[in-house]
Structures are given as C-alpha cells and as structure tokens.
Length: 87
Image (cartoon, rainbow, N blue to C red; front, top):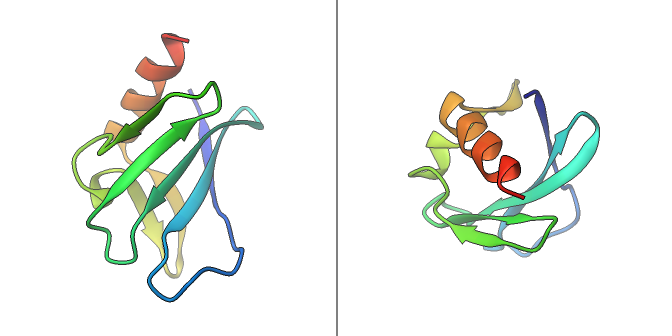
C-alpha cells in the first residue's frame, strides 16, 4: 500500500509531542506521535485502537524530515499494512 505522512503543524508546547497524520489513498487512517526527543512514540488508528512503540524506535518508523520529505520506513509500511488489514 502507498501511504502519505503529513506533520500536524498546530502550535505545541516546548516539550510537547510531534504529531503526524498518515493517509492511505488520500484517506486518514492513523495519527502517529512522538515526544520531543523521539524517545516515546505511538499510533492511534482511526478505528480507535492505540499502540505504543509500533516498530521499535521513532527513527525506525519515520524517514526524512528537515530538508527531506517525510516518509515511512519499510518496517512502518509492513506494520501499517498488517494492522489495517486486521480491521
């Protein structure tokens, strides 16, 4: 499956979480978050299921950032495919 990741740019507290929407074929399927250091992270699926530490560390889930476009790692794509297939 093809996924798109977009950072939610709402104002956040200095030590608040970074949040991202994950879309599949243009439809919002999950919200992913990580803390300001990338130590803690989790995902909330639109069908209501929540999970902490979806595929190891935050850097094992997201790719890009800074000057590079945001994306998902191969592990993240496999994880999402499996979880969304189970709905």
